[in-house]
Length: 170
Image (cartoon, rainbow, N blue to C red; front, side):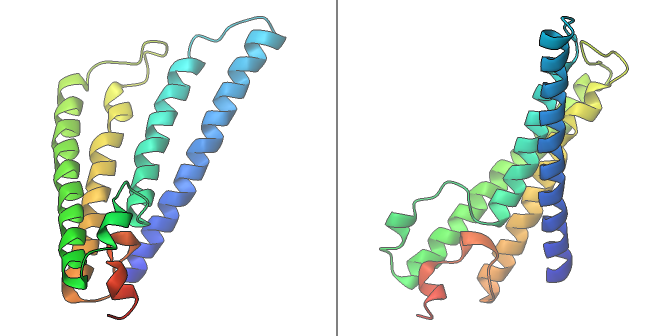
């Protein structure tokens, strides 16, 4: 299972890189058309924004898995090993709760706004654009479950959910 999890994270990291390149390409095409050809494209700004949101959401899954989310490391490091484990579990549970809220809200958004289309290109359904919310939230839930299982089983915890005292063998 850990191997599949690592493959998924590598895929997401590669996907985030592709999204970054796509955003760069879209913006460069828009700038080229505006300043070289003197014709402004109506769609590039909207789609660069969509790609930025996708990059942020999928990148946040990778950041969570690598333990790069906001935390109070300086404070937690002062705790005893047991309290560090409790703080790590609490942190992961908070992130899991938030991810469930985003998952449910994202799904409701898709259902509610799914028939709408993008402003500049009416062939693009907003349900496709909004699908990033429940998908990335479900992936965050998966990361949290993996981290919680590892934390409670005493195994190696992916990311920084692992208390510092556990790393030092205390």
